[in-house]
Image 1 (cartoon, rainbow, N blue to C red):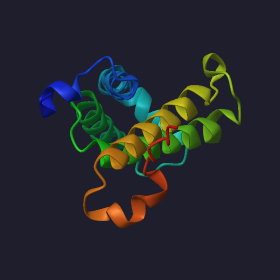
Image 2 (cartoon, rainbow, N blue to C red):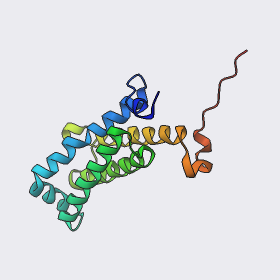
Image 3 (cartoon, one colour):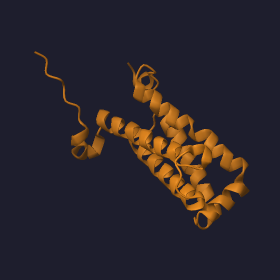
Length: 148
């Protein structure tokens, strides 16, 4: 299977997870673009100053993560960045609304799930291709099962 085909092999659950993590970013970023002034107000309430710069940064990061995860580009790095973006988003929600769990009530469970899924995608990509940092990937290496 070619590299491009393997990036979109929907029989692999991690590929499906990676693509979904990426696709979910597009409406997230678009809502900030369309509602820029509202996003600026929210970021200001969260204490992220200057709020306009943080909104633009978040849009850029969300689009970068969306493209990278959807198309399988730099997955091991973009997955970690995605988890960081979701951690900052969870911080902002907690700073403005307090600590809540249910997403529909300004909770963070959706963001936590997204961050953990992004980390799982990154770890899987690192396991498949450790690259330059392979020395640090030893806990991730799969061992082959011994058959009798």
